[in-house]
Length: 88
Image (cartoon, rainbow, N blue to C red; front, side, top):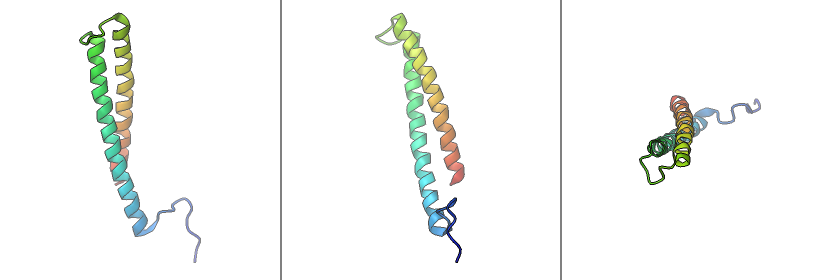
C-alpha cells in the first residue's frame, strides 16, 4: 500500500463529497457576505450624498470612504463565491 497523499488528504468518493459540501457552504457564505457589503455600500453612498441625518462634511466623507471600502469587500466576496461555485 502506498502512503496517503498529504497534498490531497480528501481523495476518494467521501473526500470529494466532503469537498463539494464545503465548497457549497463557502459559496453560500460568500454570497451572503457579498450581498451584505453591497447593502452597506448603498447605505454609505446615501450618507455620502447627504441623504441621511448626518449630512455634515465629515459624515459625508465618512460615507464615501465606507462606500469605497464596502465596494472592495463586495468584489472580494463575489470573486471568492465564484471560485467556490466553480469548485463544486
